[in-house]
Length: 397
Image (spheres, rainbow, N blue to C red):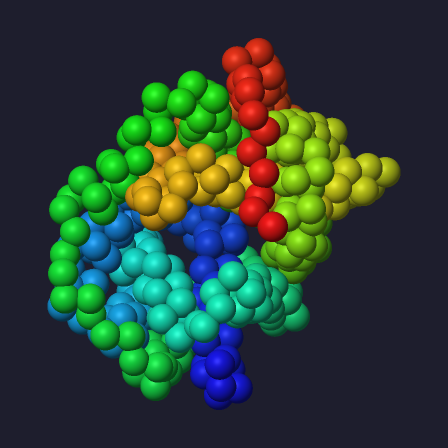
């Protein structure tokens, strides 16, 4: 791969996830501060990405892949997205804000798949080359957190302006990316959501895992939707900047996954991920900015184990179970069920829970964080008692 192509693809990935990290992490804090939103309203706004996740495969599979060059449609989507990110700060009504975020999410989520398609189309050895390009996405998210902290804009609308500027920049630069022509054919609706992979449900261990994966999205939603608001209310300075520790942890632990996948096996890795969810929320429940500040940092740093050891391992487990023939459909189904349906349930549930433990605008965070603790424990016990894999699944050498 030519150095210029590598540079363009890496810059694309950096901006793609910089945009997401710039507005998503602090949206709950923004809504609480400027829109005086309830927990349900914050949860609803975060559910917009879950809805978009369920819809975007149809857009990619039924429209974009057939009619448009990937880099051009991504450019248009990001330019339109920049406009919506700006308008999100111009409304003072929660309903209007929700619809803007929903429409923006419907534009943004397809660009995740489009950016991957553009990258893979240029790679000669995807297995070795793609991780070096994709890691710039994590770097982009980290840079967004650092900039928010350095500029002291965490509790201001300027996080959306920052994301809008980056979106406009990626929109323009997308037209200079290597050409990725349309495939000239469309998928059936059932194929777009991975229905071909339903055959995996006849495999009992995978079905048990699949249900656990959907359920564990509920604790995940609590973190994405309310961790930044909690840390700010707890008195942590530059909470968004501190939260990049979670992304750094994710980048570090993901390097250990190929080794651990073969050495300790998929079940133990998934169990470690679920135990990490329990520990994270216990740290949040009992942590404070005084004597127990370390617990808040520990809760953030555990993100790498929480996410990588369950979701990244889950993708690998799904691929090995599916085999070459239906692996793309299986990954689509796993994404649809977790980041789509699972996160949709989780965002609404976390919103209702937060409101339930809020009195006169005061959040009772200890009680709130114990809810995902109990859910994670329940999922852990379910997994321990029912997941029985006869032949350990290994990663191909």
